[in-house]
Length: 356
Image 1 (tube, rainbow, N blue to C red):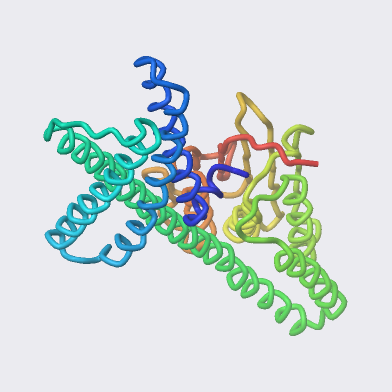
Image 2: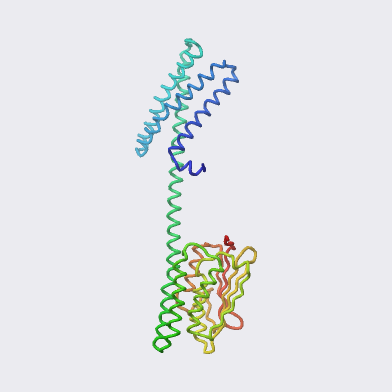
């Protein structure tokens, strides 16, 4: 059984600690009996005393659970009173076992011996009570931490889903506009091809979990589905070059992380070039990091403080938000001017190899 599963099962955890604790008490007393050279029959007395202590402290658990939410002063009063009564009763049982079994009816004459033995038992029960409350508070603290972690995870996943699903309406809006335009100019064949390819692309997006990462190889397949849609619009005006290393293809990346960047290049670069343009997509692994690059040879854009100042839309901002949500500060997203013209986006994330 795993330790965490044992801790989570409070009923079983209590009994494991209860039995182990009183066995430990018995062992300590047994070692003491060897030091003071007690007779072997004293071992039987030790076992009886530990057994009695184990049984007599069980009701304390149920009493403490009843007063758990009581006011502090009342709780302290109950703990000390219950510990005193239980300790005194346990002391009587121990004296009986000691005098009747070990010393065959002998009674000590010193009055302080009775008091000392009684106080020792009360102290042990108080220690038991302290351990009970300490472990109980620790379990509650762990439970609250797990709840907070679960709530944080759910919020994290909700944010990721929101960011991922934000792409679909944006992409659909542009694609449906293009299909509408093709129908208006009576390019029915091209419109039909675009609808068919759009169906394939949307099927992929719906079958992909927005939370989980996917191999870059799979992401490139989805990207090619998207580019096939765009090629219906641009035909020979759109050129795409892939430069992906074999190791990089097995890297895990957020699903549809490149599509909004390609869409941004097509919308703000390729669409404004009469002779069309080129988009280059590169990926490699270096120093245990995955390096992704998307560049175009368009007219470029104004970059201020690492951001585009004259471009509206959700593509780049969405990508940055998703990267931050997934990797916190362990990533980089850099916009730069391409050579000789155009815009270039560089992404660096930790390299995680997909399992085959």
